Length: 317
Image (tube, rainbow, N blue to C red):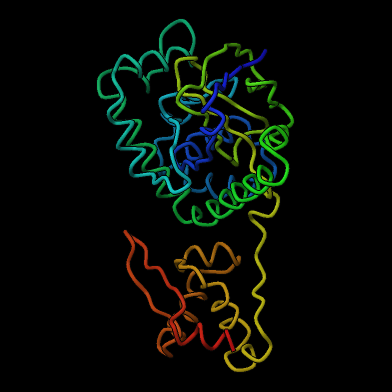
């Protein structure tokens, strides 16, 4: 089976990359059905199972079928590498009841829908379940996940610059190729359709696919979801390298944190990245901030830390 997207004229310049928190959230439900397909994600899967009783697990489980498909309306095409979950959830709240019903029935096949997916207000219940799932299972790790996805986008952009669009597409799970003006995708499913990509083709890296995937319904905007590079290192504790003189002055852990905080991060993100407890990280962050080497600002529910100008000059020397 094959899905074809036809690029015509300016459409070749309409190939773009984007990152979708909502896509990752929904596609991660595959691991509920078949965790054996995601051996590199087992540390996360084990953690997820510990909080399962605090989630609307019955509804979430119903959003994945035996073929590991999920409803198209829950995996909308993102437009930017900087897409926010809040914006995506706001968009799907506006999905028409007809589209919701179409996609759920396409997912579940003939017959009655599972009980959690029946009745009025099903879209609101789905959004609420996904929100709770995000807060418990994704939010503490999302900065680390996003960094991996952004790294993949950077790599693919370099591939286009050095080797061209066709070579980059051929490297997406080995199931995508550009033939003339047509992008052909061979997903591991029974999908087959051809459609023009007059409004562009979006490439979305993911941690939750084993091959290239496309929307189920041919009316959905052209999109290819593919496996991001570097997944094997996602859950490995990262080292804290630091210049020797700086480590001698501040201690290895605090010097390493300063090096890491060239870009803002929260204490929970740092703890997940380094494989330590948040309390251990907070102790060092408080000391560095008290010494004038960090500044902090609240961003939503999290407090983000970054190096101060003084710390930048210290590391520069």
